[in-house]
Amino acid sequence: MIGPVLVPMLVREGHQVSAMTRTPRKVDGLEAMGADPVLCDVLDAERTRDAVVAARPDVVIQHLTHLPQRMTPWNVKKGYANNDRVRGDGSANLVRAAEAAGAKRFVAQNVSFMYRPAGPWILDETAPLWIDAPEPFGASIRLHDRMEHNIVDNPNLEGLVLRFGFWYGPGTAFAHDGYYAGLVRRRMFPLVGDGTGRAQFVHVDDVAEATVAAMTKGGPGRYNITDDDPAPLYEWLPEYARALGAKPPRHVPMWMARMLTGSFVLNQATIMRGASNQKAKRELDWKPRYASWREGFKTALG
Image (tube, rainbow, N blue to C red):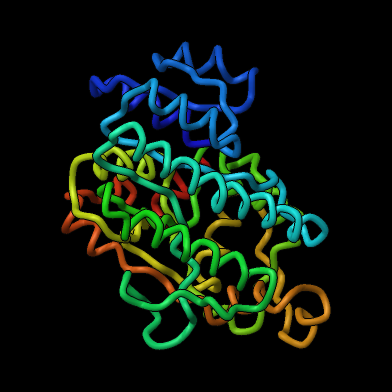
């Protein structure tokens, strides 16, 4: 989803881009964007090593993900398992390939909504991850924690992990034709309980710009890449519905929500913490083009 935004941006800035995909139908599109397409499955360690070594990169960018376009209660377990395999084994293969190629820097994608829901409502990168969260999410968070350590603590690379907020904009689940938009239009994305769980958003254009900034700026470490306005569910969800031209969301009490969904979803709606982007703004010399989802929703969905 980020390739059509990030690859042209890199090309415009004069970078020679080798873009890896495991999908043959995407090869022509990558070439049209100005990249050198490489057909390779990151789970194939030997092929990945050969491809990265042949490219001789100064910087390796990892935007690995394998989630279904429509995450439902029926496919969530399989979806997380597939994504965890790509982020676990695939990331490890790519790190080893970057080392073999002599790359200087490794920039990797992660998410900013894995923090333990304790303490202040807005957390920075020093806050602990929720490694004992309800399953299957706890196992996924522990895997992502290991992935981060493998990158940030690597003595052979300058490893940076970008912890992104929820992506919105074209091609995302929050796009006008995206999965969450469909749920909201059907009034199937309710306000749960008091709706005080915080969320943080980031437009895909800001995702790409932060990735480019991390290629040359900042030291090894973790960076929250979000807008300036983490907000509770009770604020952002009605505004999102309004931007879509949809009816206001229904309200579901906690006792009913427990019967219909898992505990992790309930926790996201009620106790999830927001993430501060101050470190990224300071050390990556980056700031979001869309400072708030309040403006961004209207622009992206209008």
